[in-house]
Length: 457
Image (cartoon, rainbow, N blue to C red; front, top):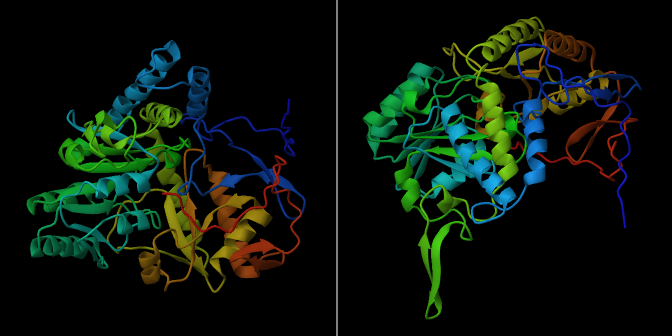
């Protein structure tokens, strides 16, 4: 009988303690991480816009469910019936959290990108989006798809949308709920109203909005909404598409296979299929029960604070971060529109002539701060805002504290004005310390790391 031994980390795993006791706790808060100079410091995770750690309540719920893990829908055993109940109850929990209409359908997907690609196969006509969008929203659509360049102000951009929708029939307008580069929030209800006036439906990419603010499908009269669990403190591989049933009930199944059918027969040399309606029509194969349960658990944990404590906590930190970065002459913040008044806790910036990847590497290796660098799967937007060069992105969350923001500002000032303290070189497009003594394989799995450029929407 073989066994696998996992090497212990340099320090014991930290307790899950939120900086603000009124907010749900996250797994990994206070994680000790090594620096290139040999010291160990608590990790300042300021990269939550890419992927957020699990809520403690989510991890606990998954651990409770694991002993029951079994097949769903057609399993007669007790564990199967429990898992089926958990999976289907998760649909209702997610629907309530996003303010869905009674008639809306909830389809579980892998993530936001998966959900948008699923919806793309159901759209019976032309589509439109802005050039400020994440690549998932820019690229998912098929056939007649237009990309409208956003103007310098929101007011002008809305006028442009109104004109574009009047020029030719458009089935669906895809918009972001909050920019994954700048955090700016467009006026969703106003955009939906102008789209509906033109006979166009709207899908909102809420991947960046839902972890920070209440989303309201019925209140905004949004037709479809998509989001990712891994950004909503439920990193177990599930996302959702929520919205009107009619397109989804007649569209070709997203995947062909078991679970998506009512009946299958063979007539001559061809299969005869009677497909199930949505959501099961688009959920072929064994579903991600743990992911759906995790996403529902996150919705339950966030629901009491998403209107009050969470946004108040974040906005105070965002103001502190914005003010601190504004005092560093070398830092240039990125903004899409001159007249936006609302943002979630995401901000992108460049630092003088320093490569963004070098800044991010120094923040990690020398200060224990995790940020994102690159073009954030928004290349057209970065081409406009940063001349096509990479930028640094800082994103805040439930476990971010004032000390994390202050550490970041002080570290960026030091790097901008004095340069990195260590020596760095590029390896496969990524900046790494020349003499890196940190153990990047604490579990002894033989991992070597990767220079991948994905952004996990």
